[in-house]
Image (cartoon, rainbow, N blue to C red; front, side, top):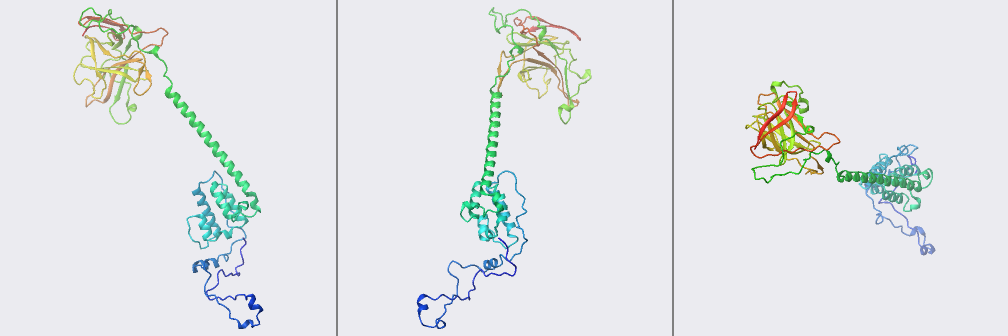
Length: 444
């Protein structure tokens, strides 16, 4: 709506002292009494329901006196882009639009934009340019907000939403509806894509969780024959079977050095690969181990004379990923093993100056893991651990080896030996670089 000139004045409300002549009735017109002789009634108050406060009267009387430029105050608003706003964001944008449209006029604060518009008579400032700018904002309004403001600006007639059609015709209701439909289609498409991706992830997760683990039974440690606890011949602790015959494919030497310096920081940064021989619990490769079956799993280890006395021997049956299934420790003297070493006390099956045989649990077939899934016993790790003293520079110092099933086409089974308590057995694990690996021991 164009602004009037500065000199134009308009009285919005009559003064209390103003008088108003009433029109003569028909009977008075027909009467012969002179007009000047009839009394003129005076109005000393406003009609009921039309009273306004002095503050509102002053604000309304100066409402159109504000001079602005030839262009609308909202003509240079940037056209919004992006998705649709929420109802709260739309109200905030509408309020900012109305404040700019008011151009600094004295306004009455209202939280609701509709009440703010009505209380401050801002609807009078809407012309074609203002409606076009407002229609650009309406492209991002929710459906409820579009309907409410279209009805409000059209004076209650939705067919005339957003005012007369001039330049705003490019932003008519059909264009708004089309834009809303495009936005709705994009939103629906986004939701569908999200649901498809979520469904794919759920299906993949179920597949990974329910899929049976890889069958590695051919790589598992298995006994050549079923376990027999008693041969039935009446001898104490007698186990059927002949002398121990080594399976060469199941022989390994303890040649892996594990050395971690004492100190702070990550253990990986304190690993050392070169340790003086005098500090090692046993020379690298000096101890050789293999596995047997004698009323259960048995790990036989042969080394230099007296190598295991006053030492800490640790044997662990593990899966392919080194998840332990059984761990045993043997210390010939109290305090030989570190305080933090984990494992159960081992049962000594056979002991000699150079030979030590410890009983272990070697599960046959698949093992159900408490954390879920299943696995097989695929390796046996054995070694000599040390207990560093308080002045030692080592936090961990050990010599270890691993017995694993070789990757060959032929099946490899754990051999069996027999005997009864008190029998002397000979274990020959072939020669090593440190000399012959053989020795005798007495069954317990």
